[in-house]
Length: 293
Image (cartoon, rainbow, N blue to C red):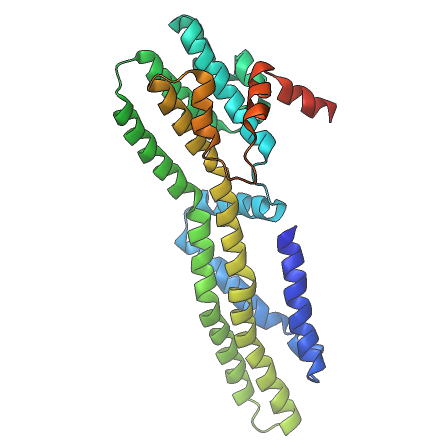
């Protein structure tokens, strides 16, 4: 919603200032200039990116407009899953634990935290490294290096829509110039008309330059930044998992290992130690709270 509020303020100030200077809003209504700019931008976007990135950009835009960033409850869910799995590893046989990580959809642990289970990439990440812990042959520093490499790959994939949107933002001013040049070409064909007609045509052409710059710096660029912020926040889950499981591999008790993960959460979203302890002592309370809500 902050995107819509920001756009409203930006448009309001831009149009309001233009009107206050004596300008006429009707002059800015040049639909074909916007068709040239918007259509060309979308066409180059399709040329430059594979369909996977095109679809992911649509998904990223929805996430950005909704401000879909993790809340304290989401972090507690991840910590709750990790605690339950670490307790299983310490207290039960390998076969019993493998039942949870081989088929998480049917695992009682993951079913208690449906939001974690919905995040397929995160669920796979957790299960893969718990499996490595079960095998027992991997050294901590080797697992850490592997985690870092995978997180880097996940981050690169998650940021592809940002790079795509940024490239479009950088190209929009030039596309605005293209639209303006086409408008000037049209105006040159009307040199025999009255100054009023010619002035209108030149003004319409200049709207293309304005639109390209405005869309670049006031719309597409900021939206790309918002996508980056949202996805950066969602990627924190993987760091939580990494630090928690590495601490567990180094011999920390499950409750202590959770502290390593909890400390990676931003201070304004970080749950307290008491909240984490209450959550881990009452597994499944997250699901019950959501159903009650």
